[in-house]
Length: 467
Figure 1 (cartoon, one colour):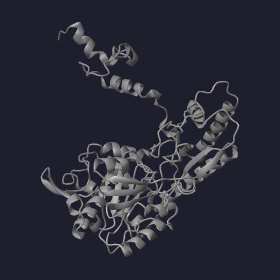
Figure 2 (cartoon, helix red, strand yellow):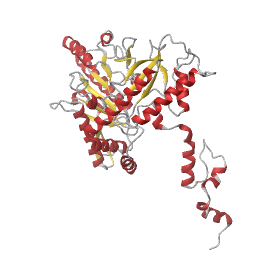
Figure 3 (cartoon, one colour):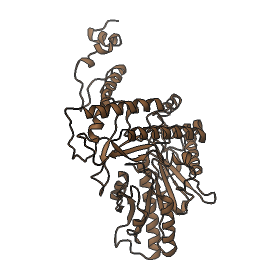
Figure 4 (cartoon, one colour):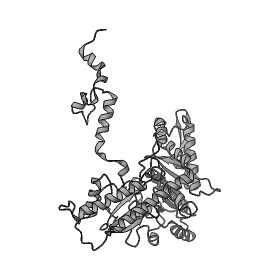
């Protein structure tokens, strides 16, 4: 068969070395679609090279999100990327695995056996928080109308500490809810329960307790909050409920501190959310939300949808998405069991306590959280130190070794306090932690002998990812 030189070149393109290809020798279009296709090996290398300078995800100590899974889990998730989580009629076994995960979490969170708990997977804790907030709002509205309250007189409100994650601010904006914030102060780096009831009125849809504040890793005193809510409910027709934002803590505490009462054992805790992609040990993104009883999830938030020949209930905000993270979560539950999760989390806690001691021994820092509840190490500069460098400079030094460690101010009323935090995850083993500790000491030594410092001592903005 005869062919032109152009056709011959196309047929022999696989013989051209990758970095000898035309695509590697010219600038590719970046903001418009290029006209011609390219070989998959070249496209793969171009994309991979674009990501080359992003850093090593396992050295990212700013994030709670999981950066390691076993190869078997990765293979299983890769093999199921095409499964649509919403299509339960087409993928009934995937739906069954999701149902098993909900039941496992209900057991972990001590859902009462005499109640009808229910729950769902979500894209992450942000979607789960939205659903928890919506359920509280709709239930409040239904009960307020029964009591004869004019629900149009003012907007409903939600009470939360100033250590909230930004998804709660989004919820209040998206669904017209006033966010009444209990400010943190130096004596209360979590929810000041005594101040909660200064903000409560008949338009309060609920109170959010945080099991692991993003900034510091601190826990709200949820047991005390429940006692105060119960006392309020005994003397008021308007009944308060508690939602637990357990994005970080709800998949950690049941294994490490099972005696701590924060979950459905408490009478007024009616819903809990968590992130499977944090201490559930799954890659992003998967979250979960459970309600103690169907009473706390109004029927109007559950939709029966006809989809691809079947009818199914759905309560999530998102619709089509891959089921691979749900399957990854079930793999972890099956693979680790209770004791496996406990061993992993206990090891992670041990690593955090070791690093907290390393930070404290340097003599420069005051420890805010030492990793005893969540494996988060959080600290600030000691007052009165005669040093020229700041936590922002320290973050720069650590970044030179690849470590991403954020520095940022605390929320309103404490914004003059700059803190630094690193998150210990399951893949931060003790030997790697020793390497980080050595790099931490070297960074301080370099700063003490630096001739040029970049950051102003008065800086108080965020540096690095904090949510």
